[in-house]
Image 1 (cartoon, rainbow, N blue to C red):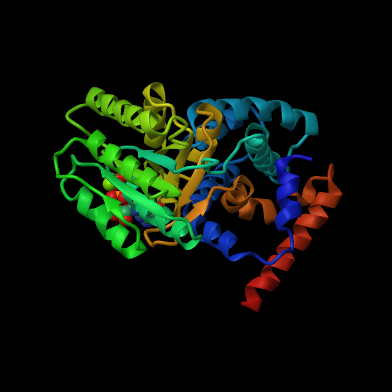
Image 2 (image 1 turned 135 degrees about the vertical axis):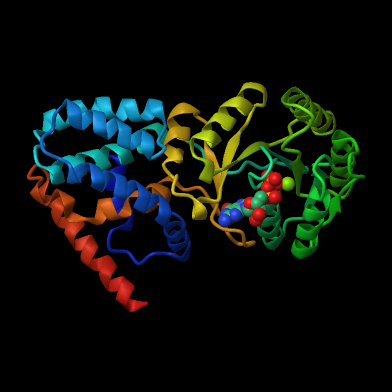
Length: 358
Ligand code: GDP
Ligand code: MG
């Protein structure tokens, strides 16, 4: 069973959990921009020919699924549409959405989206990424979550380069009731990390979250500094950091993908944090990250508030992105799969009922 069917089975007719609702709300912009683009494509639909596939490829690129992914999907769709003999626009729409969803599922099948913690001793998470991506905010949110779980948390303010960065983390620390290790502005970031690791060991802290600079005098310096920070951590705690998380801003679309590719060349990342999904119409970037980078997305930022952080769950995400297109009985004329059409129609009615219940 492909991801498309699994999603329908998982969400069809069930009332939505609070978490799903959050995903849903945050993905609204992406969903409508994706949906609008596909709908515009179908409005001009005459026949399934080469022009149509060219337009489809452009549409997918415009929806930020990434160039490679767009070409791959279009190629596969050519075959699929032929195979299923889909002729009218509803049938073709259904094949396209199913393909997009299943593609994520196939690629993401054995993806590990969970955060990893040390079996014993302090766990260290290192946060990297360009200025403004949302590193400090994500650390603030995650610290609160871990603290609420009863873990002892420590923060390291190793962004000593950007004015106000240390104070910004200290404000989060106060809000979360979590201590922050800091040094002077303009000081040596690796020295701050060293102090923090020593303190984490001494106090037997559960988790140390390390904030870093998004920019130094130049890119080479930044990469060198991150390397140095990692070595300092390893010297004290050889199995750490458990996670090196690259934070990227989803609103920047293709740029976020390029940043990730760049960081990936020098820093070994274990996962991605995709922030500002709530403000982004570019949620399609997740498909690009999945297909072109092969680094799992682990957390998503769904807003600026402390509890606007969620674990990345591919099925929820993909459902949020394509919801309207999955639920819509667009396949009503797709005679190849009458059961699925019936299920889709049923689910649609169910979810409307739930809307009224609230
Ligand atoms: P840093 O330079 O990487 O540390 O980025 P910051 O954590 O300072 O965040 C930059 C801006 O993005 C701040 O105004 C944050 O409030 C905002 N921000 C971070 N994450 C999110 C998110 O998930 N959604 C929204 N809407 N804003 C966010
Ligand atoms: Mg910061």
